[in-house]
Image (cartoon, rainbow, N blue to C red; front, side, top):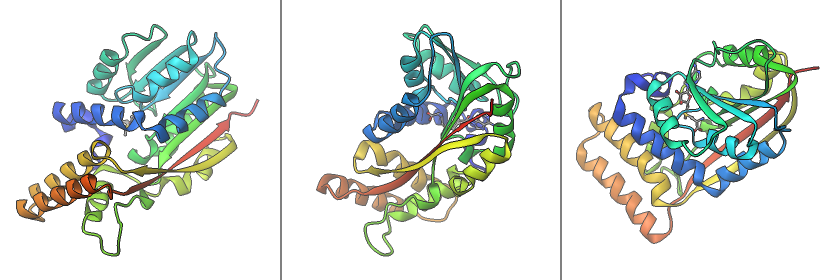
Length: 267
Ligand SMILES: C[S@@+](CC[C@H](N)C(=O)[O-])C[C@H]1O[C@@H](n2cnc3c(N)ncnc32)[C@H](O)[C@@H]1O
């Protein structure tokens, strides 16, 4: 099945609500907060600037951008009407923030009109990342900044031992919910090919150790495997029980790598 993040509205309201909540939980993680704060600190965000987030989802990151940029204008774009509705609902307290439904390859914005474009965990979910980067180049002012932050899902694991059975949930997540698990390795050349100059490229480890962070992965992935008929409910329940046991014992361990590339459109 195709990665549901390619067409979130088709995945239905239950998916939208669950992942809107789950992206809020992920973004509240101290490591994720640090990643976003670090790249925002490196953007000028002048009071008269315009910053856009492409693939803003339900606005978990857009709200952080709006708080850092205030009073400067921030606009979140996402192709999913369902996510945009959630984003508007969750960001009522930010007067400088708005959301619009739009595909990242076709933004309703003039050429050379925005100061910064941010793509946070988006390119790993699209089939043509180059088209989003070319569009970012088009809308950026000369000297404007591009931030691309993405998970390197090719390195994601729940393993604490060889052949760890819990790791099938990480593998299943990547198989079902990711379009290109190897996007991070291609980022620098994709960004350069779109005409931008890379200023920095860093990778940070995120460790997932709590029930709140990891249970949605385990529940959703085991449910998918049952629906496909690959495993029975007994094994699905056993994997969730093993997850819960590790959470209780303090031995839960998930690993993700997040890369951040910052680039500039040449002046
Ligand atoms: C994992 S979510 C990340 C949402 C948000 N950036 C965050 O971190 O909370 C991936 C997002 O990419 C969006 N997306 C998928 N295809 C896209 C496209 N062609 N253009 C723009 N966004 C897209 C999805 O609708 C979804 O909201």
